[in-house]
Length: 270
Image (cartoon, rainbow, N blue to C red; front, side):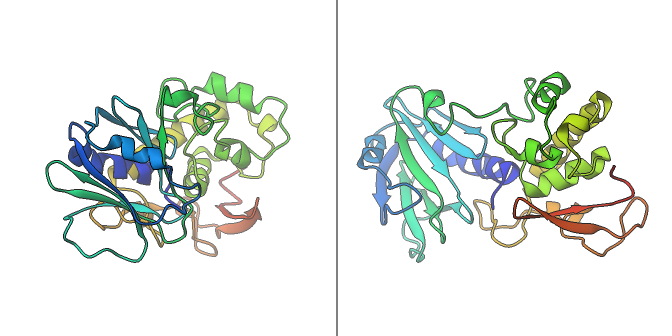
């Protein structure tokens, strides 16, 4: 599933082709995504895209009439292509820009979204209750401590909750907890403030590093040019079950938490 670094990579890749450009045509080949693509998406035609931003895993492209919200779902991607390029089976929505390029939403599993928001985007139900961005000044140890206080839930579940902080997906949660030396199954309320401070730093570092490398390709993710991300090559515990820990050579373990594979070092993480 595309996570925050992959979505940020996509935003940086497509923004030069969208922001400041006028949408010449919106093409909806199949509106049956996670939510039906609304007819109002055609309001973008003739409009200049004023800004491109990301909120959690949502891409937002703002015009004078409203905001285009895109989500890549489980295996979606945005590709910049020539309008004459043959359509692929799962190319569902496209935006032809005034400079000639076309941005296509490709989504084999149809868990993505293409919605049009009129009015303030931040008040939309999909965005209104999201936690802070992990790379923002709002994500502090003080904030995380309040979210963990007296919580019996595993610390991994807490940091993966988008109401706590956005964009910390399974891969990055495993990697950040390893960097901070915290066992993923430890109750959040039992993690001390100094260790939470290490976790905040680790989350920031692992996400920033992945963004720099263009995201993590395990199976589905490709960027706007159809290229993979390379962060997988630096993973320390994720998907390394039965391999030696890079820090102490103890065998990396895997357990299932909330139906997700969780990887950790039983010696380094307490």
